[in-house]
Amino acid sequence: MEVPTSSSSLASSSSAYSGSGSLTQGIGQTTQSNLFTCQGGRVTNMGKIMSTDNKTWILPGENEFSTGTRLFDLFNECAKITPGSLNQIDTSKAPVIEIDADGEIISGFLYGDNYFELYVNGKLVGVDPVPYTPFNSSFVKFRAKRPVQYAIKLIDWEENLGIGSEVNGTNTFYPGDGGFSAKFSDGTVTNNLWKAQTFYIAPLSNVTCVTESGTNRNSANCTVPPTSAATAYALHWEIPSNWYAKGFDYSSWPAATLYTSSQVGPKTAYTNFTNQFGNAQFIWSSNLVLDNVVLLRFQGK
Ligand SMILES: [Ca+2]
Ligand SMILES: [Ca+2]
Ligand SMILES: [Ca+2]
Image 1 (tube, rainbow, N blue to C red):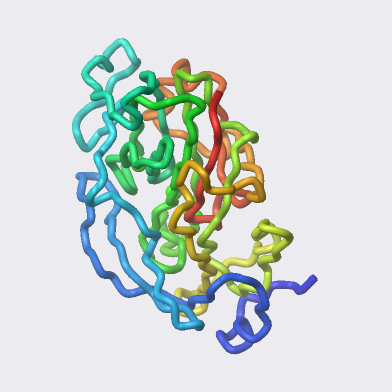
Image 2 (image 1 turned 120 degrees about the vertical axis):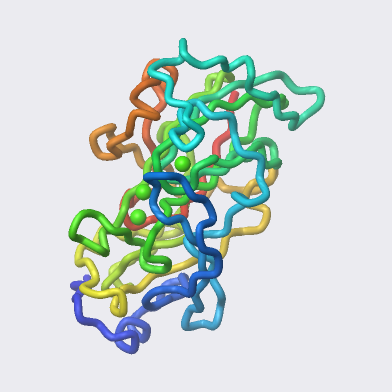
């Protein structure tokens, strides 16, 4: 096994890499400033970057935030909705989002670090109303036929576009982490029966630390952080256009990895509603820190 180094050049890093991902180096170009603004929240930008195989990648990831319906707030400081418990919020005001006219009404609680999009039976139900920070949570009601085909896009947003990092205290290149939990009234909870695949891994000091086995994209050996933005690398994979379709075959994807509450560190937006999230577990792909765009699939009962 190759030992990652912190001083690799693009040439050495690129030539030694033989995996299926596309390799990028350094910071991307900002294409949209202030996608979302909220007092106390991090700057939320989008951008793009070109990989060595001449493909263009959206940063931090393709998303429907600008066009998708924003989900009903359970807790959202930006909207000044900060209940201490479920008793302080009228969930009957949440709209029923129609997916299947002949379906039944299903409700759910969702918390993601930092951003998620919920698809059900091949259709977008809605998007997380706060893409980056502060941390928020959502309540959803939709009408859909069972068994529900869940498809959820997760993005661990980033301040330094293209290198999977953000300002944290005196560290301007802190690699932020993710985490997601949800519970639905059809009995579905997030757990390791879900599938989770990563499509963007960063920051990497040397991309050859990422190994692949089947569909598994494993970055467990990537323990050496880059020492500068210019020597920070990333790997990207194209998201299948039909990844959220009812018939999309995700059976070969890796199982979701479980994380403890202390690993994820959920904020008040979650901890005020621990009863509602119940036995739902925190899940992500195999690397909570370096995997920044993760797709989940699951079939309910
Ligand atoms: Ca959010
Ligand atoms: Ca991250
Ligand atoms: Ca994060």
